[in-house]
Amino acid sequence: MYVVTIDQRHSRREADRVPHALQSLTHIPVIRPFDRTAGDEFQAVLDDPAAVIDTVLTLAEEGGWSIGVGIGTVELPLPSITRAGRGPAFERARDAVNAAKTNPYSVAVMGPDPMPCTYAQTGLRLLVRTIAGRSDAGHAAARQMRSGQTQSVAAATLGITPQALSQRLRAADWYIEEETRLLAIHLLQSAHS
Image 1 (cartoon, rainbow, N blue to C red):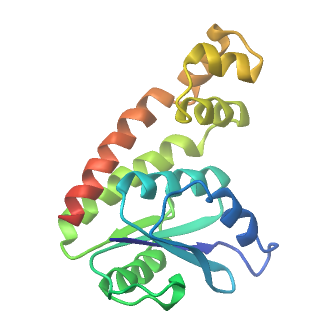
Image 2: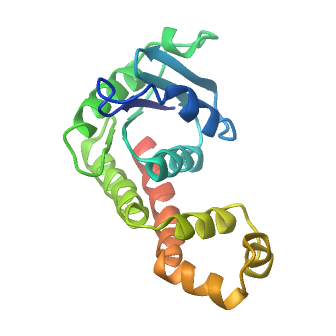
């Protein structure tokens, strides 16, 4: 299992952004839902590395979050409330979110075998780095492509020409995001094995 624990950065100086983040993650398939655990923190239990990637990408695009991914077993049966869960994956997610707070890319991965987790963490950090410098237009273009649309449909949805969309996607490093996403999924699967 994957337990993702997320902490709002600068929560003492900024408004509570957790409700908005929870709403932005409703499309993510989870085993146990995103649930506030303490003031500015929330977590979920997932079993799909692609869902972990989607969580990281959604929150990295918003910015202002520390994201910890814990890999491993959980005590079964899982309680209906996420924050009541226990087991090594929960403990590792706690350690990972604390490590993420001290990293410029704000994401960390911890699991039973450190080396595969380091590789997975590197894949996630590359993804975060790829999207960190995007303009709003670049984020919008990438979101359209992530939703599975063709470039023609995405361009029409955004009200721009296919050529303009292609330029935005290049400037936003969409093509490297797509490949790095596949790499990160593979690395998370390997870290879980």
